[in-house]
Image (tube, rainbow, N blue to C red; front, side):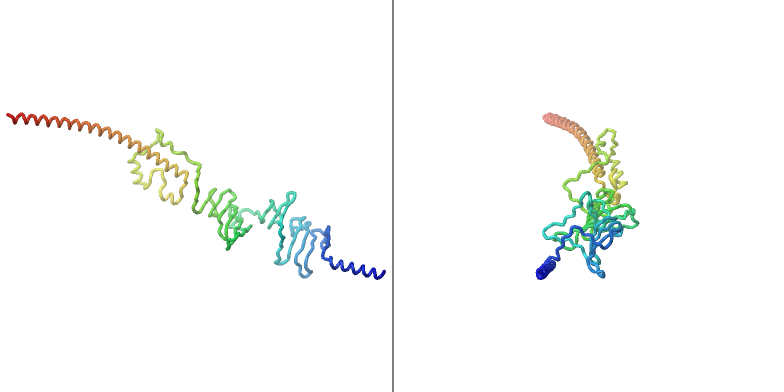
Length: 307
């Protein structure tokens, strides 16, 4: 009997030694901490903590209450590593994921906001970095930047901001302070550009009451001002730039005025041609009369010579 009990004990020790690393635990309720305000399980020793798990009940030092945390001490990383599977974060029942915030307000929120109003100086935080596939040297980044009174989202590469979205709807490409709905610092290549007019099309030029300047008046204006009437000067264009919609309508106005000048010139040419034709007919008539007079003179001279 004693021999049987000894063999049984040895067998149990062997099993415990062999399978001692496998523990089937349905509920883990560590006794360190009483759950108010938190309860935790640490790895390491009392002199050298490594990492741990924490259920936080009410302490705001580790969250906003009723949270579960995985934490490390010192400069240790937290790594989620799989074989060929995926790492999935699946908030259920409307849960949210926060990175750099304890109170996310969306399905995924990166970073926290102090919401203290417009800063006196520009502040910026890089929120997300994306590495290229093979291109070396730097990464793509997403950063939030506040400069009074605007909040901006910047997308860029290395230290260059290539795209800026401002909270009032302005977009900058190559410009970090867009002053219009689209501000581009550089060249634009497009197949077609459609512009909604902010000024009326100049068909008013063809109305009878339109005050069309004479050629002499246009010439005097050019001599005095150095540019066409109703067209900005070169200095104004260099200072204020060119508004395409307005400028195209001004140029169309000049084209329509030139059309009226051409029509008037054509009418003058037709009238002059008619006058020239009358003169030509008169000259031809005079030439015919001159020819007849010469014939008569020749006959008279012939008759006189016969005597």
